[in-house]
Length: 113
Length: 114
Image (tube, rainbow over all chains, first blue to last red; front, side, top):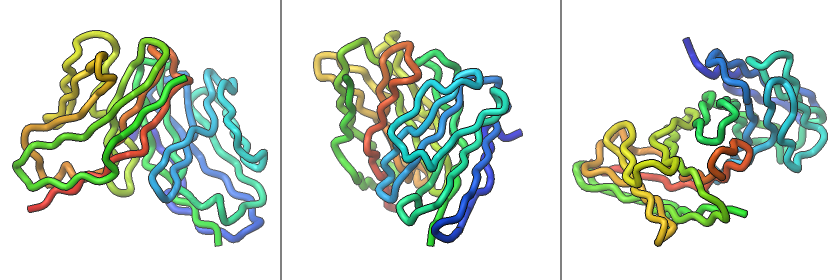
């Protein structure tokens, strides 16, 4: 009964490939997020969706595209992968109220070779 | 604008001794503040949050934090460290009521020595 689940846990791929990471939450939250954590553990928000609508779209390459088929799912597609994309990507969810804490998935470690 | 500064990138304590992880924030508005913990190969888990109620906030696993507006601080403490407390800790600030404005600190790695 995992609250926020993302797959795969590990993803190793070559430069230039296209890959996707899936995320699902069963908490009934209306807002979902993608964060990128670099090798120094710094967390940076990439995208946020509220009820399937994009509300935060930080400065990330347009090779990254989020897709939200419904408010329980937020997938991340990455085209033409580059070495610098190697990181841990976290999905999270919350209620829209800013006082509501984030619930994180366990992360997807992406390694681009 | 808002920002959060975790004053120590690494803290090392002996098991059974007190833990202090320091966090200072800057916010133009009334802030909400959180502490999250990240164990190896895991996502972040909420420890506690401050949302303009009591200034001393108690969280899970014996942790607590005190909101001090005059010092713009929200330090995390625990009276007695346990080996299982070894992890990365993140202080987070947001504008109260806004999920869009979360700002994460750079993290503090806590090591607990036997």
